[in-house]
Image (tube, rainbow, N blue to C red; front, side, top):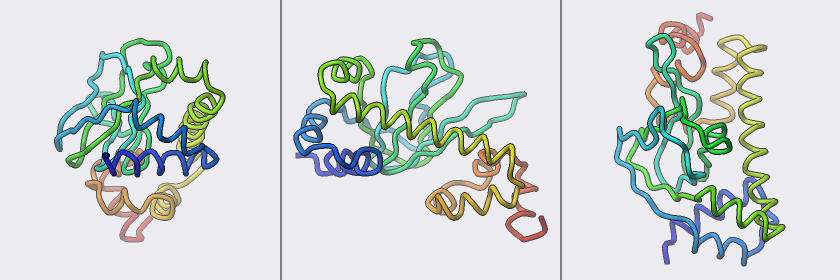
Amino acid sequence: MDTLLRDTINSVADSRFPEMSTEGRSFLEKILVRKEIEKGEIYLKEGEISQDLIFVGKGMLRQFYFKSNRDVTEHFSYEGCVVICIESLFKQIPTHLMIEALEPSIVYLFPYSKALKLSQGSLEMNIFCRKILEYSLIMSQQKIDGIRFETASERYNRLIEQDPEIIKRVPMNHIASYLLMSPETLSRVRSGVL
């Protein structure tokens, strides 16, 4: 049995729906599809249609897009996180977001078509999928609120407190992009000038 798969399911379930039964977790082990992604590989490209919820078993991924010829990081995901391109997945339309592996990664794909069928037939799977989506929406709202209401220093300090793994493992240019500041501004924030 794939121990990493079991650990990944438990990590995702424990952080979003800790009440999920052992049977429900075991059922997911039979459905998820393992995929290895090389460092630097673009798993989902702009213009493609997202088909899966992605559970990260190992590695670091980022979602990003291009705006005015600049690369803008939307989100980072690492062990125990779920990656979703929500609009593309739900509407089955081409995405603007891309998914890149910043480290060699192992992910487990949860096909959206299966998630829908399972949600219709099982209250537990319905709750699990809903909790994943709720968590994703809350994280998006917190990021937007940070951009609207926090200074550059406050955004950086919140990232250090809430997600130290990102600070340890992600290049500073991607962190600056994620925090919607220039690398120079991030450098000033880190040195305490701002």
